Length: 532
Image (cartoon, rainbow, N blue to C red; front, top):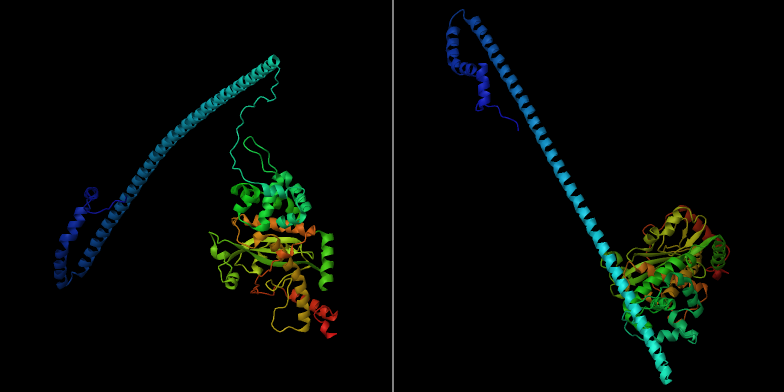
């Protein structure tokens, strides 16, 4: 703290008194002022007193200035001394606090080391006691087993002796010791036992599981190494075929878990767990094999098939985005709100998106699953891995056909969207529509085959992408194995498309589209046959 230097400070007054400055200057300044004024008036009236007054005033001013200078220098010295004293005091306090902190830190460190040492000793004693208890229990168990075996042996000998004496043979085997088992509720498995029987009709099996027995066996064989579980002493594991059947039947019908439980004779929680486990196994094991971007040889075949279909060259895929209904999530509700479905159905709807690219057969070559239903198609495309690979130059020189909800880019070919079309543009849109119909029909078969996609499921939002990915993989397996869909399962696919804010992303793509449309008209493809 800074010290205030006033006349009330005794140290300050004593200092000035010692210097002989305070009293003299103070008295001179207070007493001499009236006398000086009188003297000046008298001297001013006289003739020759002007020079004397001026000299006296100068001398008096020099004395006063000298006194003030000495006072100020004394104040500065006192202030410097006070600062030094204050710094020394602060440094002393800091040293004391540092010493105190180090002492406390050392005490706490020693206390913690003692605590951990005691804790280790406690755990060591506990482990030793637990090991001793286990050894005693094991010894008791062995002794009980030995006693039981000796009793059984004695009983067998008694029965043999008794049979020898009386000529009566006992056919009953000695009873084994009691085995510990987990209680399981008895549920009927008759339906699944019938389906798993070799005599079960193929049509009925296909109606239940949306695939034939051979395809089902193929999936079971592929997943055996991942899905199979071993029996335990508490209960027997669910067989692989039953595990896969629970998952596929649940995906195919979309029925609630309580009905799945009744069909397969398992608990509800067990059925839910099996569905997620098998779907995860399908994603990890089967997706890399059955859902992937085609290699160079397959790309050549796909381009040729699309060109035969439409007359447009270098097309490697048809792209479409659909919506899957979900229960209103607990977080980000507005993001998953589907305004278009709500307005059309007059019912509040929430959904997530599934974007897919298919080949001419309707087999998925790329999927993007899980973005909120409020996002338009162009935004879903921009966030997909497909878009990232395109920016890296993966699709240079080829086209992926999309609907009017996608923008025109160097690798995305979309129809003309203006109101008044020329004959050339109309012909081009017809051929684009034929290729888009391949993707739309494939999604219709996907939803028709797997009924869980038609209604709001009980699966949590974070687990839904795994389930939807499994549906896409199973769809590809059925398509590749020519598993025909029952006509009664046809599904009418309705997804509203919104024009993107920026529908033209590349001037070169616009010129290329105009050139393709001109070639279609020049070669008299579909859409212009009425001119011939």
